[in-house]
Length: 258
Ligand code: BGC
Image (cartoon, rainbow, N blue to C red):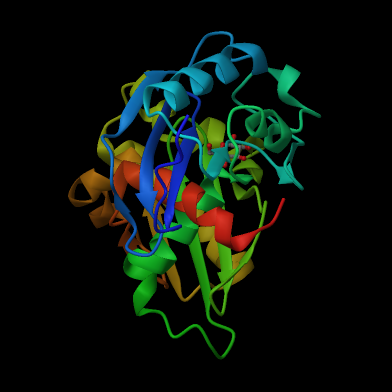
């Protein structure tokens, strides 16, 4: 297979989610997608074997043989999956970076999915406006199937913060206020926002962020729920929507060498 990455700035970004696996070729200098965005439903059960088969098919379809950056919804250390809250537990201990290397001649990097989305929003979204100095704290929270978090101090990522799993009223925060809970329980925007507000206030009390960016597919409905959020920090919707995870995964090839 020919490597079409002539300029060295194209990376295949893959975003493995609890609901969908999304991918596209990304120009990591501009943050723009340079191929169609592919979206395949996450297999059920989402075992490593089944998910890797989907990824193999995507790579073949895009005829890609260059670098890959992949976001995964769990803690990632040196390319190895350490937790998998919303996918099969068989993922725990899998070296995803090595698995991806079987499919390509390029380098492969793996990053937590929310950290990936955060990297993209910091580089190309509202995070661009941040000073990135004097200890500025930027918190990105993704409200999707689960809740993901990405924490930046002076623009530097502190990876794997997993703030979606703090306890609120004796319950895992993501089990109370993820967007999937709103959908499953058919909560009104107002009712759901109350839970989100309590969650974000708790984080605010712990971290005093200067800015909170809300991501995940639901961020495109910010006009429906931001009016119910009462926070000290500046709150902004993510600007890249569902592509942040793909673009940030591709950017991880710059951030880490796994
Ligand atoms: C996982 C996180 C992930 C988040 C969003 C949580 O359940 O523990 O690692 O970032 O879901 O996908």
